[in-house]
Length: 136
Image (cartoon, rainbow, N blue to C red; front, side):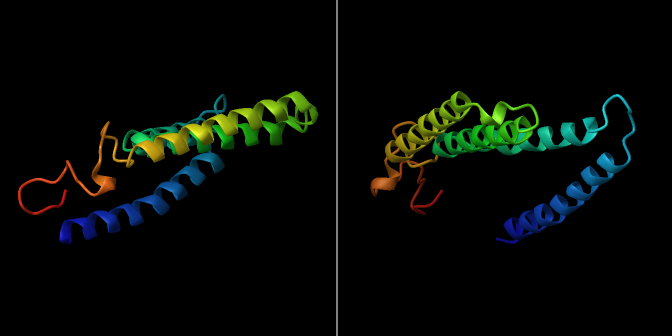
C-alpha cells in the first residue's frame, strides 16, 4: 500500500510539471521550422506509454475515443476550409463512431477488460487468482 501511494503521488506531481514544460515549449520554440514540434513529440510519447498499458476493452475504448477526438479536431479546423459543411464528412464520422462504439461495447461484454482472452473472473471465477489469497 505504501508503494502504491508513493507511485500515485509521483504521478500526480509529474503530470502538472509535464504540462507546464509543454506550455513553455510552445511559448518559446527552439526550432522555428517546428514551432509545436517538441510539445507534440512529448504529448505523443506520453500518450504512447499510457496506451501500451491499456488492453482488452480499455484499449478498444481508447481507440474509439481517440478517433472521435481527432475527427472533431479535423472538423473544427475544417470550418476554415469548408470541409466541416460537407454532409458526407459528417456521415462518415458518425459511421466510424458507431462502429467503434459497437466494437468497444462488444469487447466489454465478452471480456472483463483485463486483456486475458476467455477470462471468466467477471462471472465469479478468477483465473488470475493465485494461491489462497484470492487476489491478483
